[in-house]
Image (cartoon, rainbow, N blue to C red):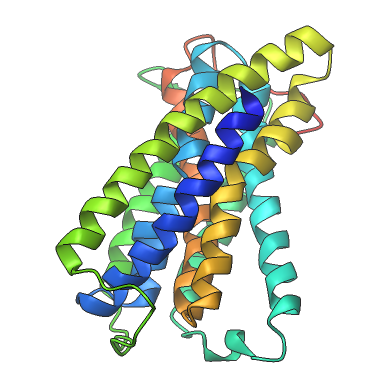
Length: 267
């Protein structure tokens, strides 16, 4: 089930990137905004469902490990694709506006580190203060990012003849497939940890994190093949932003304390 869900996520992500590229070229959303907001969230749906599912079944190690481990995997993927496409120098064409999402991601990462390092869980309505702070920073950051004025890419041929409405509908369809696959990944990962005796932290930080990040990797590769580096980099940075926020969301549905406090030190 774990392998099947991962394969299904990859299949859906391949189509997601194509339709997101059409949306970015045929609408008033450029590659920067489409990648950072639309495609990043869609390809991160496995992290969302996997992390929340882990919190609901009282496994904070998988919840936090998946969110933070996915960030590491995403950056490594970006490095590998930079090497692969080095002759085309696509990353030199990336908009400077990605500095905004990169800075927000750095701030959220620092808050997450502090949340993991403190010894006491301060809560408001049973929600830890670090989680509330992360959600607030993310909301303000995304609002400011959406206001950035970035020139739109030209509507070039991508080898796909589909209208904007068709692209939006198909995007939602494949995003739904990824959403379901994410839940299966978390539940099968928890069962895998119980059946094999492998650490839940390892399962969350390595196995599930890599599996749920596969849609991001595939989407980035397809975006680069289509010659849309802003969509690719926006997807990675936006996904990393979302990966932190899903850990904060999982803290809301974790009723045995704080996911930040109840994780193993190795996370």
